[in-house]
Image 1 (tube, rainbow, N blue to C red):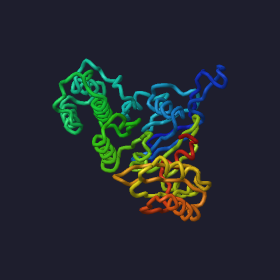
Image 2 (image 1 turned 60 degrees about the vertical axis):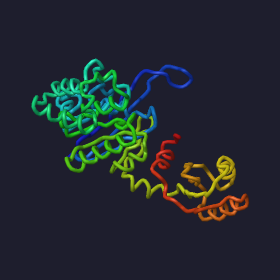
Image 3 (image 1 turned 90 degrees about the horizontal axis):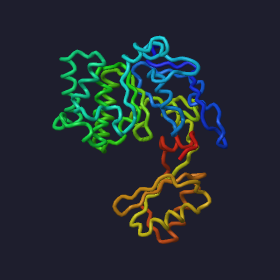
Image 4 (image 1 turned 30 degrees about the horizontal axis):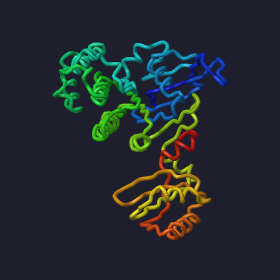
Length: 329
């Protein structure tokens, strides 16, 4: 089996603040071993400060590891850094567009980066036109980037990452700052690049819905270590102890009071989600035993005159699983 990305005991240590304000060595990446198959759409997840961005920067040859090494597209990040850099496209995961030249237009930014990546001029022009059209930037192609909205800058950065048609893409929060429609189109683009063109995509996001929709397999990081490396299906199968029910409440007049009453019930561990739709209130709850909870919650709400449209057991979402594994809200 061929691997697009491999990490071997990868470690990055910094001098920084540890407990009680004392200075010491902090391991942002701690003995990470990882293999991502060619053509895989792989999710790299974790709470803020888990080490995801540091790991990606090592793989992109932006910073050097303290220990261990890695290979990208078969090239060693320490010994063959130039070949590594020609093998991937990288979306930086920042919304301010700091990696763009603000006093250049979108098309001039893309021409400049195409030149740096040795893309032939005629090929570059065709690709630039295609990306500007896809991201709905044609009418603003000559406007200076400094006058772009956050979403428009994100679109230019995505186009830049794809310009040289790399086999591997590092996508760090690629839909951050985009509106709903642009986010949907970007997810569709990534899926197409993966399934039809066979590109390997390493994808980070705090949007668990996106991760569940796109990724085949995920690694979850915490405190610099990979604590889980598994398919999403397997994770759900092994963590079915997250018992949850959903209550659909009709004509809810006092939603805050209803939520308070539910949260005070002994069998309710946590309110997982609250949604309002029209006149209905949807509440998803983590409970100790769904078979005991359903009749007790039904009886309690009826005693207060609350109308229940439906109450049912539901599968844990990937967000529930992520919170349980990382211990973060």
